[in-house]
Structures are given as C-alpha cells and as structure tokens.
Image (cartoon, rainbow, N blue to C red):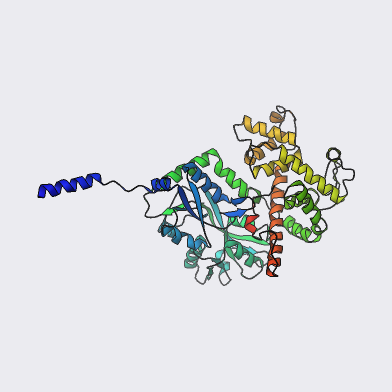
Length: 472
C-alpha cells in the first residue's frame, strides 16, 4: 500500500505543471489591461480618439505583444495603486514617479522619462528664497501623490511647515487655485506645469524641490516579473529607436519655450480682436475641412489678428499672404479679412494635402504649418536631409532638427531648393501649437459657462481633449 501511495503521488507530481506566467496569461487572454489617469500628461480622449504620452507608449506595447489594449481610468493618483494591487489591471501607466513609499507597494519598470518637481506660486505674492520662507503660508497638494510625500519630508525638516492634501483635485485644478489666489503654493511636475502655465501666465516656479524625478510603469508587487521584464525590453528598445523622444516631442515639445508677456497679450487679444474675425475663421474651417482654432492660431502667429498688417517683405493681411500666393489663390485684396482668412485656410489645406500619406498626425499638421511658413519645397529638402542622416522623414522631431541645417552651406548646397532660414519654421510651429492650446482652453471655458447656464455645449469643454491633438 505504501508503494502504491508513493506511485500515485509521483504520478500526480509528474502531471502537475507550473501555473502560466502573467505574460503568458495576457497572451492567452488577448488583452493587456492598463490603469491610468485622465490628465494631459497621461491619457485623454482627443478629437481623433484616445491620446496622451502614456497612451501612445502603452498602445505600442500592446501592439508589440499582439494583444488588445484595455484602458481603465481612475479619478486620482491615489486610486492607481489600490486598483493595481487589487488585480484589476496588469500594470499602471499613469505618469507615476518612483518613490520609496510606492516601492513598498509596487514594482517599477525601466524609467522612460523624468520630471522636475516645482513649488509654484503666483507672481506678485512674494517669491520664497527657501523652504523656510514657506513656513506659515498655505500649501495644497494632491493627496496620495509624490508631492504629498515631498511635503512630508520637508515637514520633518522644517518644523511649522503646514500643508493640506486634496483628495479630489488634480494638479491642474490646484494650479488654477494658485492663479486665483485661493492658495499660495502648490507642487507640480515640470511637464504638467509647462502645459498649464500657458493658461495661467502669472504662475512661476518658486523653488525646484527635486530634479530629474524618474517616471516609469508600475506592476503588482506579488507578480512573477515576466510582464515587467517584457515591458522593460520594449521601453529600452523604444528609447533606442527614438519612439520615446517622438512621444515627448508630440505632447511636450511646444511647451519648452514660453513667453509670459506674449501669453498675456494673446489672452487680451483673444478677447479684444478675435471676436471680429471668429465667424470668418469658423466658416473657413468648415469650408476647407480644417480646425478653425488652428487657423486662428496660425493667423495670430502671422499678424496678431490685424487685418491691415504689412511686413517689410510685402506680405500682408491677417494671414500674411505673399503676392505670389495671392495670385495662386486668385485673391485680389489681401487686406480684406474674410478673403485673407479664406485664402489662408485654402492654402493651409493645400499644404496638408501635399504632405505624403505616410506621415501621420500630429506630424502631418506640424509639417503643413512649416510648409505654410517656409514653403513646401524647403520642407522637402529638410526631409531629404533627414533621410541622408538615417532619420525618419515622416517624423516632425527629425524634420524640425534638419530644417535649421538649410542655413548651412554644407547642407543647402546639396539640396535642390537651396538656402532657407530653416530655424524660423521650427519656432513658427512651436508658437502656433502654444496658441492653439490656449484657444482650445479659452473656448472650453466658454462651453463650461454655457453648460452652467443650462445650454448644451457644441464641443467638449475639457481642456485635456485639446492639449495636444490638433484637428485637420
């Protein structure tokens, strides 16, 4: 009987197999389940569908695995860890920085980005020279965030430092409270602040609390490591291929340079000048199938919405059309605002059509704007230089790096259309991206006001849907 028992036991042990790894389960299920946050620095639904830096990266990861991507949204950063720990998702892609307190609950993958942590204040309220100057003043941060961890560390070092933690608001909401004077300070990561400061130009960085805080995907602590290892391989390869850099440029590239004075002037002109021409931009956008807000941003970059603007080189009108362009468009009066706006919209739509089909959005929009400024042929030359350098001519990140080379004899002597002031279209595109975002935010606020009055808004009022994904 003992021999029989041993034989049966041996048989059972021999037929038992290890449970499938997390990665194998995902492949068998055909789904990668990801939890994230609805913020402009992670994930949002734009005019063309889901978007955001985290979405682009995790979408690529799901495609690499050959499975469907299933996104779950939580309202605040404090909900991400419990959601993941409860097994409701395979991983978190939510712009999480790696902190010691989070490491106790989660495993983190290879860092793919980094941010600086800023203490933010409003201009004119007294800039602190050190954390000690913040003692006795009001500070509010997002609950359950790395910012609350930072305040706990500072509180231990500076007795008397007090702060409150907000359980419902995100960083963008707290930045607004600082701008309105409802609270004196908050903490924001550099990526979030660089986006939001375009809407609140009086916000400033008081102190840098942390530099190069790493950002990474998070995984359950009790996992077997198979998914984390595969994700690390993907992130490392995406960094080497330039994909991570392309994602960062897509969502944050236009935020690096910022003109506080120019932004305040733009907001004033939105209220004082744009109303005279807004219906014209909207009608031209409908006629030529392009986003009227992009046209308006383009028009502001060209003329600051002045119908009688004239440059030293002879371009004129709201859309600053050259004489040759006006002739091509069969326009007699470049100073007539309606004619100029309609012509500019048609010319911009033409540039969009000329961009090769291999170029996707938003790169297609950025290249069309550059072509509007410098000419399509010079854009072609820049794309050729990118090919010679081994880059991707369908990516604006690569093309924007090549355009300034058109001012160097080494390069312009080799291309068909020669010299160009190639740095200008790069600055031009970045400015328009910033103006477009502000227009989206301001028109979104109008929609909120209409909604509060009981009217149904024509467009989604959410800023996040307008931050980075331009219309066509």
